[in-house]
Image (cartoon, rainbow, N blue to C red; front, side):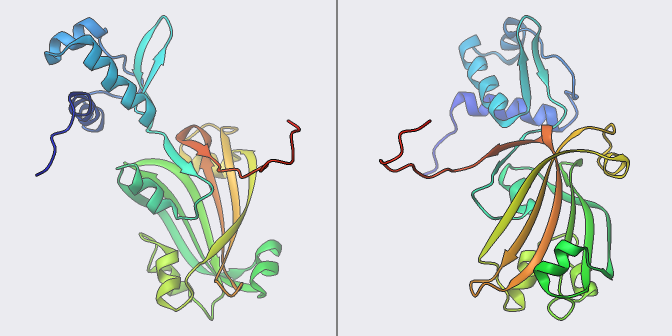
Length: 243
């Protein structure tokens, strides 16, 4: 027998629906807690618990002495210890993934891409990834043409390159990523609809099969204020007491 959602989750769902439907727009301030609780017919403690849930999801932001505001976009919680694509990340947050300004073709490989894949020309897919219509990532993916042609890569512009590789018997086992704090140049700023100089996290990643064969190189410019990044760190395991 299915369990009923708690009151705070029901309230959070109602407020989340108002945000997503446009009833509350980015930058809007919520009514005061007493006023909103009266509107919804609930206690202030229940309302406060629901607002806390939406804060954790990134839908709302409390400003001390000012009030609670609808954020520009939901925060996407990205655990960098897990290797999954942008589509899965966005879907995991209950948001609708999308793609804009996709282009594909065969092109000369950048030096770092050529070094990883061992070829001078690559199949390339460039696209802007969206979450509920908000532009959050500018992504480029490169593969060997003999593993995925440019047309095959373009055919999955709305989906997962990982799935396309797996269908060719090239399932990705792990990825090695370089993380670089960055700012948006004129091109990236135009693609993400943000001011030039906006903060980014740029991730350059090489994905390999279980046999250690590099099959995909990707570069993603993540809009910094759209993501909450976490990393699982092991150790020190007993011997190292230095801070």
